[in-house]
Length: 481
Image (cartoon, rainbow, N blue to C red):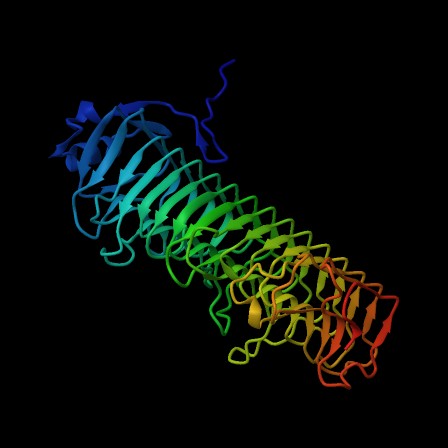
């Protein structure tokens, strides 16, 4: 009995039923001859779920419109070089079930690499083991971006690829079931390495975004930005996962490591952000989403703030390591302009903060109901060049209408010889918050003689209504000042 033959497309990987070779359609691949028509003819001839093969060579093109349900595969040394200004090497607009693998896509300082636009999302796109390069800021938007989707990117992945000498990297508007994995970014000269900006659209969107294992250095903008306009535009994004990414060394003046302003419940874990060799940037990690889980990250040097939470409720900031912040290691911040001045019910726990310049943990908004627990904050007198005029606070409290908790933290000044003019305190209380607690903390100086203050009441009556008990003040000049 004969059985029907079924051709399937599963998880972005096609089962090829045939292949075409671009050279068999007349493509020269010498980097000089215009191969646009030959390559387009090969694409147009691709059988259903077949493969367009690019042998080694450099194919000069003005732009190629890819077809759905086809794989585009390059042999070692195969690349496409753009020859038309403000165009893209590949156009995948409104297409589905496309795989692009093993190709070098070179913007040739004229335009971008892959564009998806139109009025329908692209679906089931897999970009794997490709190289994107020479996409410059001088091109018109969006041709100054390596990969850009202006409508939607669904059930798709971008992985194991390299981006170098590009103005901007991956730029996606509205995502659903998308993975961006294990890509490398070098010399991003104008904007972000990875940028997601969900918009309201006429299809299901906003779930299962995962950005993981990416790395890069020499960045002008942000390593990863998930953006929501303010006021919100009605777009949806739920609990994106940003994990195990590693970025270092910024070149511009207004960059960040991770900026997550869309996607309540975001999971941000295991990332490493370092700027020890670049000019000072704003935030290592910026959070403007509710219920974020920020755990196990490392932020090392070159940022004003290690982790900044701006006016969003109930984040968990736990188990992170932050070194060398030029202002504060962790800040619950306030933006009056955007009416973002509450971070109620925050949990800031078990973080290690080393040599933040001014404050270890700064509670600078409505932190009512928050718990500041079991953090270890270390400051070395003399670590910063202007320490002769600095007062450092391990934990700095600003007013909140309800009680909060500062318990079981350790704050250490660890220089034996302290710099004249530098002052150190464990906890600084600036206003009355009845029912708030400062309990079982340890404040210690390792100096040769007692130095600094365990707790400072900044107004003389700020501690009224606080419950202060069980604290240990070791080798400090004042227990409570």
